Amino acid sequence: MTASRDADPVRVRFAPSPTGMLHIGGLRTALYNYLLARRRGGQFVLRIEDTDRERFVEEAENDIMSALDWCGLSYDEGPGAGGAAGPYRQSERSARYRQYAEQLVDDGHAYYAFDTPAELEAMRERLRAEDRPQPKYGPRTRREMKNALTLSEEETQRLLDDGAEHVIRLHVPRDTGVKFTDEVRGAVSFSTNDLDDQVLLKSDGLPTYHLANVVDDHEMGITHVIRGEEWLSSTPKHKLLYEAFGWDMPTVAHLPLIMSPDGGKLSKRDSEEEGLPVSVRDYREQGYEPEALVNFIALLGWNPGTEKEVFSLDELVDAFSLERVARSGAQFDFDKLKWFNKQHLHRLPPQTVAARSRDALEAAGYTPSDDYLTDVAAVMQDRIAFASDLATDGAFFFEDPDEYEEEAVEQRWNDDSGELLAALADRFERAAGRFDADAVEEILRGLADERDVGAGQLIHPARLATSGRSYGPGVFSLLAVLGRECCVRRMRRAVEVLGEG
Ligand code: GLU
Image (cartoon, rainbow, N blue to C red; front, side):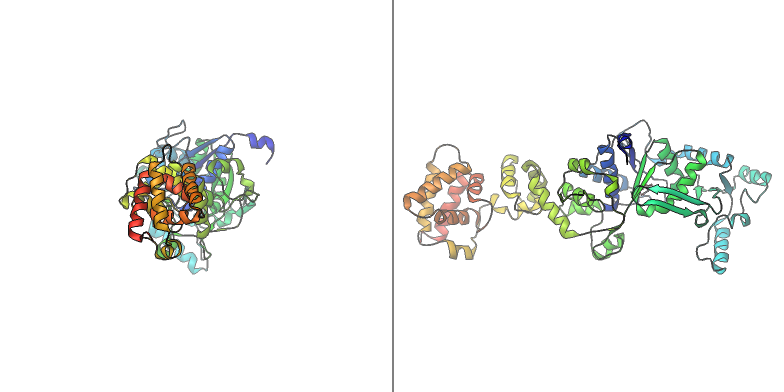
């Protein structure tokens, strides 16, 4: 792409059909659209393609919006966000589609067809019997069917006036190559002989995906259509429609399939049979951070051309280009996703980690103050894989230990530990001033020096006494976060339970 082209404004859209929970493939489509819009200073539009009433799922639209919101993919125009090109739900735009379909009829690019389902089925049966496994309503068959091409003008008009059930079909030219350039796949070409005379307007008066999609992309001024590879075969139909209307076709880019961990396209079946999470909601419920999911998804089918792997959303905006989207399928790898989760957890502000651990803490019966929880998150976030781990790996921050790791007691608690720890508790209690990690360290090392023992003689028992464990965050931070009173209480209690040695 040339520099001047790069500077052209872009308008992109994410156009999901509300037929279920937002799938991670859909999230990737939304993300790449978002990234291109932000990278190029353009607009990102959300359009709900809800003309297929049979597959409509009531909660899907909300799920899509809340998934986008959770991932930080804000849209400039769309349901709830307003915009001059609205409405952004196709069900609220129905009137215009019939008008456009009729315009195509008037211009000779489309025609009325009156075939009943039984007649269509009979035609398909006949063709299959003639060894044509994929029967089409197209150049070879339309002359044998009940439509405005075979009926007289008067007959067609009479049927329309009588309110006969009908559809409007695209008049696909015969033996014609349809060529276009895909930003990801390069030059693509299809023959019209492989296309149906696509239904544009259904008998219920609603448009099919193809008509509504093209009309809306045009009316909404969309410059780039970025969508999954499964839509590639629809593009020649769209191209014919753009030509029939006399409109420019937007630039198209079809994203590679996302493959399940054991090969094959990642599908709903993977989720149902293999228990693989495939919807954004599943990942959210499993405790993944949105930043991690976004980062992971971004790299499923795109690479930055450098070794860098961990990206914030803003960094992705800076690095993204369609040129680096791969043609071949991208394999899903859960271990990698978990790795990303850790990386992002480490980088998030402690307040955010704290807030995201709240539900898990509450479920465990812990209700720490925000300030305290933020301090806990700050010392623990490098050590956990999920924010919810604060409730388990960090449980000792919220309740006194009721037992002490046996092996650690054997190894670390010796004859002097009780007396030393009791002395440390006294010093903590008496010391004036702040009880931060530096102060804690100074007191502890001061006591070790005075007693002429290694600091470890105090560090290990202090950790064991206050957390019940032999491992965890840096001991000075641990003690400082727990606070003076808590440390003194827990240390004295350990001396009581484990003995003075
Ligand atoms: N409504 C289609 C979908 O559900 C949109 C495909 C496109 O972006 O054109 O994915």
